[in-house]
Length: 191
Ligand code: DGI
Ligand code: FE
Ligand code: FE
Image 1 (cartoon, rainbow, N blue to C red):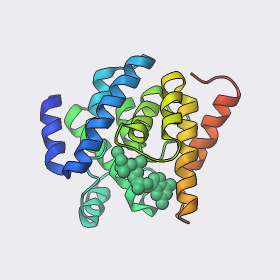
Image 2: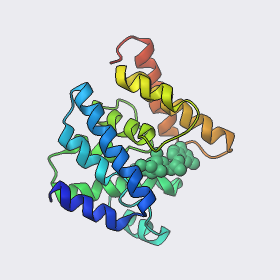
Image 3: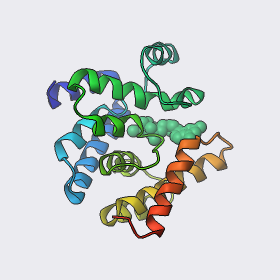
């Protein structure tokens, strides 16, 4: 599948507002990949597909989830399933040889321990694309230019703060990802 064909499928699957978000994620992921030495082309493809299942009905999500491997615990918070579903579509359309991009898509909402550069780029691009506006986003944008690990640590803190304030469940993998990133910042193995 070409990037153009993927873009058309995504446009057909999403509202115009969410499509605009995805365009922002594509542009931001490309910038971050260029800046930090990852593949711009694969970052763009991952960004295009990352929310392709975001507006599926609960029944569609449920049915898809039954037919694929879902990382443990994801089903407890159904909104998290759109990542693994998009990852499995990506594999179907682009083959099994792009596991890093596939994981970046799969874990874009939650993060995980030991995230690769591509995983951090997609997760961050999702959080800081130009249409995003929340307290602290500009500081995270600045960090993203200098240091992906620090930027994502700040971003997951921000996500967790948001969820705490609304008394929503926090996915344990996100907590573990956040702890891992801060440990990497503090041990100086960041960048
Ligand atoms: O798909 P997007 O809206 O672009 O962004 P996303 O994939 O980062 O997050 C999707 C939704 O999932 C968003 O409304 C926040 C929510 N979410 C993310 N992590 C958690 C979460 N919700 C709960 N309850 N717990 C989490 O850990
Ligand atoms: Fe998402
Ligand atoms: Fe998104």
